[in-house]
Length: 391
Image 1 (cartoon, one colour):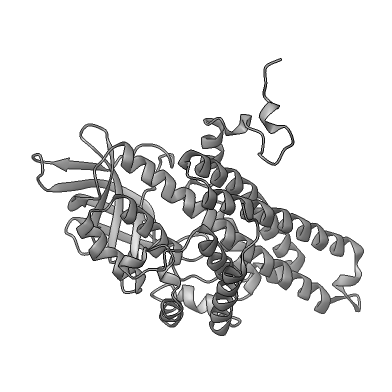
Image 2 (image 1 turned 90 degrees about the vertical axis):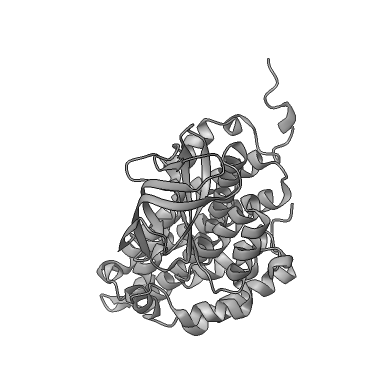
């Protein structure tokens, strides 16, 4: 497995980083999240022109057919600037589900619009008061075999639902079988309450009352596996964003320590503060290594279970580091680090939100404990194949 981006991937990282840097000047994110849309249409247009919306879509639908490493470096660039444009929630995640489950007609209709940036999807999985991995309480009813499907129930929070052109909703049918259902944004029976999450990005509470829907593929085991794999890929993509966020949060903190004076000397003159910043650097480099390992595992493995286990292991480690960096960056800035106008508060808020995404660390730990992965030593460990031999 390749544990470092290759030259092409580094070029993609540099290009995406430069594009976001042109727009994300001081105060830009605060303005974007406070706007009615929740992100910048200018940055979205620049992202599509650079081809960032094409990465997870096959070339026959106008995409670039890129892999996890390319998604990782783009997400890292997003993290460096705490960008809020919904590439992961609105394009990458829906495209994985459509490619895995959709019919030829559904792929032909939806994937090209995601690739060219004219459509935004929203994946509705989370439900209030229910564990992330639990079977959905939202129900899919069908009056007759092959007839129309109606969805009923509540999903919350649904990221970017206020600007989505379609929804992918998980639901169980009358037999208790999981399926993914395609719903048009203007379908009848939808009641939407829009709000904001802990990092000020937009999310909604969606109620379905006999809302017409179309099954994405066939409900059952294949649909469940596709959902699991899509969210494993999404968790690994979030690792790249977290690394970018931590890089920038640390860089801003170090600059602040150099420029802010106390008792007539810069804060960087105090050894205890320098040691705290140095500890953060070491923790971030460890998190980067874990994130690259999870990405490489996902890219190299044909085993969905192994990929999901690596995603969970990487997510738990990086989420813990993200929380530490968020707390330390704010504390080392002092009171100003708590203000909405200060950039570091946005980095800290997004790092905190990542740790809560897709069920958060709690769901990832639960899946890991219910799998054999805690009993399998890392492949890099010498004599790993003999480590668990019976005595």
